[in-house]
Image (cartoon, rainbow, N blue to C red; front, side, top):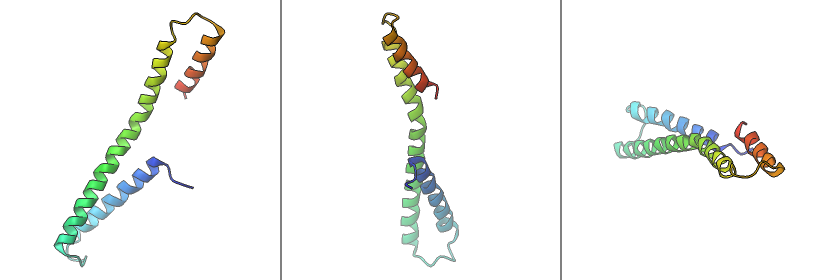
Length: 98
């Protein structure tokens, strides 16, 4: 089964932080050049920041989604109180409160 975007971002973040610690503090046990270490640390730092950014973006999706539903509710508030309006509001409110 394919991981969700949140699971992927968390796995990337965890991997990057583990690798950052490994390459930053194991200067004598890892047999790599200083330039390689520097390149690796730069890439890992970038990837950690990128995964954090997208985790924050994902958190805001729920808020934006609910705001769009609220807009629809307000947009249709001027309709007469009919079966159509009640059905529309019932469906929108059901999803809004999930």
